[in-house]
Length: 111
Image (cartoon, rainbow, N blue to C red; front, side, top):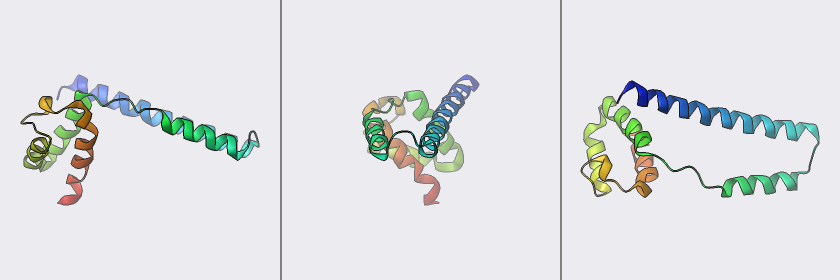
């Protein structure tokens, strides 16, 4: 993993965290300002939940799996790739990236 792709991943994570903090601050401001009503807020929350999440990229998945591999889970990563019908990450169907990452997240808890 190159330093540039690590930096790009870190920047993306910071942007995601900043967006979450902004959303929380806006929600708190709305709750304590008395503006709007609860029903309107629920409708906005439902609409936001319906928005599609941005698709994971190969680079994002690779960064997570590389960290897991460095943490001693290389064999488990190979098993996960095989579970998704691939011998290497580039062969995994992008629609399976999210599920692959969910499976990889449990590796730290399995040891």
